[in-house]
Length: 171
Image: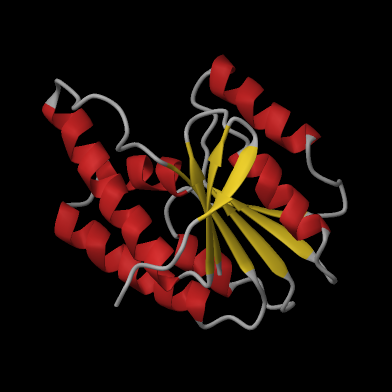
């Protein structure tokens, strides 16, 4: 697993696409975004323009583990992105339930034969949100990022279109 994190519009997805393009074999995008409005639909369309048409796409806003397990060709998966996935899960799941879902998903990703490139926003560098829902999201996302990053073989922080390799946490 390769974990890619960074701020909004930092180049995370661009890096993930470049890493996958260098790999041999099929590539499948597992995307978690839902086009709930015109602005989000435009963002999704922009992401589509930056990837080869030959890549497979699985749109799954909730059951990411099932979507990843359903890709059986052994090729590369880009999971983009954990941030929207967590936001989607928050509507109907407790923090404990989300923790269980995340652990199951990390296990599925970690046990596949092919490489998985996981994209997520770094949300902990800004102000503490004023609203309880914002604080809940920020805290959950921070824990999710730590869980995926700890399980990853390689991790990058993307800043202004530059990838900074992240060393493993001392154990």
